[in-house]
Length: 130
Image (tube, rainbow, N blue to C red; front, side):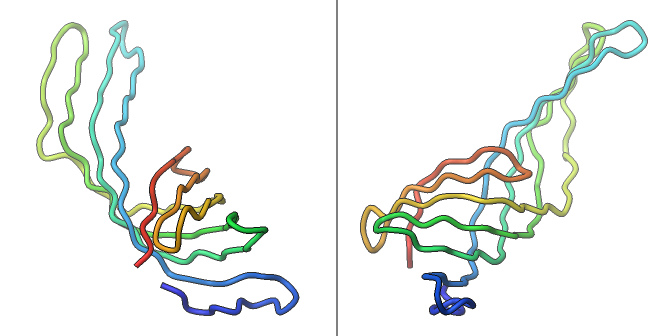
């Protein structure tokens, strides 16, 4: 959703927008504890919203910086330690912050391919403009 369509810096081809979306992540953690090998794995969905500052390069490329906040909701956790396995429900949830940079390739006026690198990790996806 464009907020400042002409951007903040007149000589640059930039714009400022807000965006909303969600990520689905699989997490795995493992460690040794008191001589046992212990691990835990879970899924997490994170609805987020925030700001994106776009710098429009030669068509069809755009690079951007982003800051988003949301809420990470964990589910499907399974833990194992010392040969004993158990399921933890409900899983913990927490606020999430996503800051990073990325590139966007405009395939058409309504669709593009997107690559992000942020504190949440590497992400790739299909973006649909509304």
